[in-house]
Amino acid sequence: MTWITIERVFLALLPDRQTLWLLGYAAVIAFFAWVESRKPAFAEPPVRAQRWPANLGIGLMNLIIVILAPVSAVLAAQWAHGRGYGLLNVLEAPWWLAAVATVLLRSFAGYLFHLLMHKVPLFWRVHRVHHSDTHLDVSTALRSHPLEFVGLILIVVPLAAASGMNPIVLAAYELAEAGLNVATHANLRLPERLDRTLRWVFVTPNMHSLHHSSDHRETDSNYGTVFSVWDRIFRTYSAAPRSGYDAMQIGLKEIRDRRVWDFVWLLKSPALKKWRQRD
Image (tube, rainbow, N blue to C red; front, top):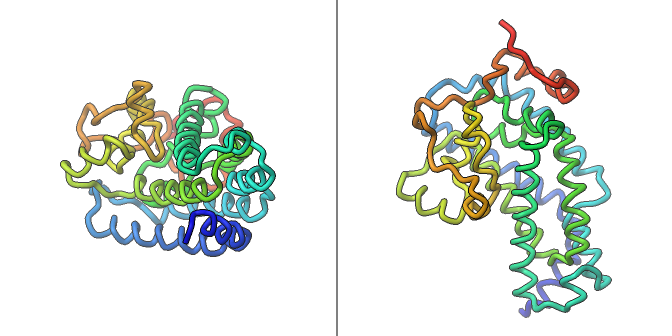
């Protein structure tokens, strides 16, 4: 089967992909929830009964956006591909070059977006909802404020169309990123040698858990979502927490009370300039 044939089959099935992808995503969450329950990296009880309703509720809101939104990066890439729009399509780039460019552009966009969510105060108000979780597990992967989710869509959709990303490669990347996002938030730790090898290229659970440290010097590092190379190139990479993984505190120092488990409060919280701890 040639690449062109594969491409035509994929594009024909693209409109019906949603249900299958959502079922696959649910299966990934269930798998890593099982894995982290077998041998958790952090021994502290994850208080799921308090945390999961808010985390799953936010995840459900983002799911509704996915279902209702008329656009996505993959659909934008498909639209541009079918009409010959976008830089890579105009240049008639060979498929391998378009594939490499698609992965590099999309992964860098994710890195840059994440960096800006930390560095721009207004964006941080939205992103801190994700970082305020006091424990790490698969549910944390779902805990991104809907405004952040919409913001990412507003960036990657025009980028996919303007650059002429390959829709098949982009779809594969989006699937891989979604699965890896669950894995890197899971309460698990890879063997040290395996982790050290993988993180030369990829983000690992150990590497990303450091990004959720309450030490702001560590929070402001390791922004990559799939590849670690962007952090290495732009010198935002951190290898290990200063206090060690076992002593590392997850969350934000400025707020550790029950509000971080309050679904409604979390949705409203970007309107607050600063968070103050309550007793």
